[in-house]
Image 1: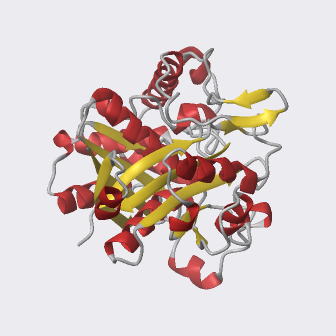
Image 2 (image 1 turned 45 degrees about the vertical axis):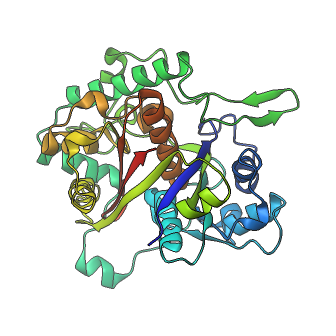
Length: 377
């Protein structure tokens, strides 16, 4: 059986809603990711056997198979195929899984997995109409924020705990930016004739616990604990991973940076919605034959602070290993791009800290979650 290795991983800096990346078409946002992955690794475009693109809101400018359109716009030969997938917040993590599966099945030896989302230009949920009566008769479907409140109640999480977690996410992101930890993973994006975008835009240097405490609850005004401050940000961005079979990497004399050793996806209660990170973590660790204690870096998507804190209560991990460079609360959550963005940050953090194993896990709307374990080589 083939072994899947990671050759490279890059991302854009993340733009905030109606921020620096607003004027860039989603296709054009993904183009420099695709170009960098081939150009700086001396890989022929013609050797790319497929491109898998995650995108959560595939309508309007992100419709029509956005991955294929970006592949053409990037100047790849027309013979290079591409397809786009939607597993909501887990879309580009699923793109990584799909790319791995193609390589493991010997359907391909070199695949790019990537993701893009311009939430400024294509609003979240704009691809959703009314829900069917059949669905609503079987399940209670609520906005994710209400699910985040249910999670906070179920795990007895206080407003202080959530705000404290959000504050630390910003502080970790600020430290990572100031110490240059993101510089290797971020590629510059030209946004004006003489200006490049290279720094995550959503990080709030001025935030304090006091300011976070002053925000009103977003979903339950009277008694709620979930606010805009302890939730992920609406964002724009793109990211991508170059994957190969280990055999192909040896043939091309390319040194792999990591290998993918386990993948998992689970379904969960659509009312609680975001709790799938708990069974997904258990499942992927079991598949890998590893324990949480063996993970040197853990990235769990900060869709809401309550999701991470509930997960923490279940597993009681060393939280210094969890989102050590901040997460979506500070950096932003460009839906379909977040899986590849988190994978990129996970890889670089493992390298910088000389860690061995890394875990990535993400909650997904309507009750799902994805999880991946990689090993640095």
